[in-house]
Image 1: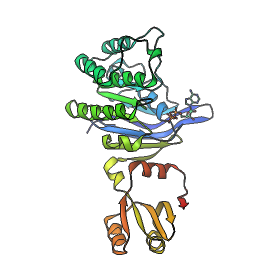
Image 2: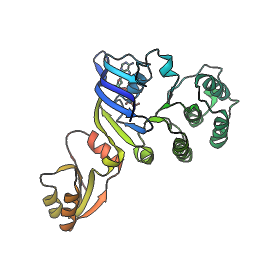
Image 3: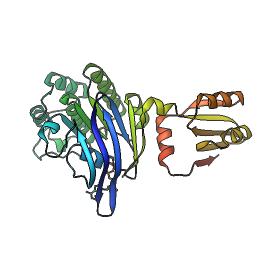
Image 4: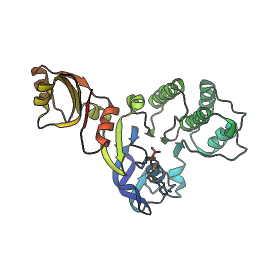
Length: 295
Ligand SMILES: Nc1ncnc2c1ncn2[C@@H]1O[C@H](COP(=O)(O)OP(=O)(O)OP(=O)(O)O)[C@@H](O)[C@H]1O
């Protein structure tokens, strides 16, 4: 496999703030990578480093094997769609799409027109007069129709309603199947986007805390439910991410679970339930302490 993005010991500091802290990871060609993390974790800064909009304070970032800074060969194949995109005052939706058609060599105009119809966005209205969701839809259309070999979406859904978000996910999956490309998407809506993701990179306070195949990650934890005493006995010595009690019934989210562990839990009369990607990420980025919740 070819790595399209390679970060090696990459850091970006702003005075005393270390937005990206000694980060190393790779994104393989033809994969969809979810970049997840809490507010202020460093996701946008990382995407800006990837697209040459920020200088690294230390370390290396390579995109298509080259440094992205002021590199037309790299940036011509890279499309970053971000929520906070600003446009010239007089720009209408139609201008944005025309500018994008000039910027991206693989721009697909008929597909862009189809997406405009599907999202129902007006192209003859100034961008600043559009609703937040309509502006986001224009960004999503640019990202999809750019057909850029590396497409990065930085929280692209702000203001998009649930129907439009689902449309975006469906279009991305469908288009990705027909025209494989490399996609990185930062999102807080982890479970919604979960089915799209091949790989998950989670950053917390600028550092990578999880870098794994989404499938492996989903199977790495399980929720065990049963009588509190049995749950307590099972979790003894295991890595517990979260515990909840209701009366005498307890449930515990246990990390690093093996097939033998599952069999042992079932033999002990405990029920097993899958843990969603969102639960797992929340548990692992909440701090060192397992959360204890009683009701
Ligand atoms: N230009 C800047 N000057 C100073 N601090 C900055 C600058 N840009 C980002 N930061 C800080 O770096 C940290 C990471 O910010 P970043 O925008 O990358 O986070 P994020 O993960 O994208 O957050 P969110 O999910 O809230 O959008 C934050 O503490 C932020 O305040």
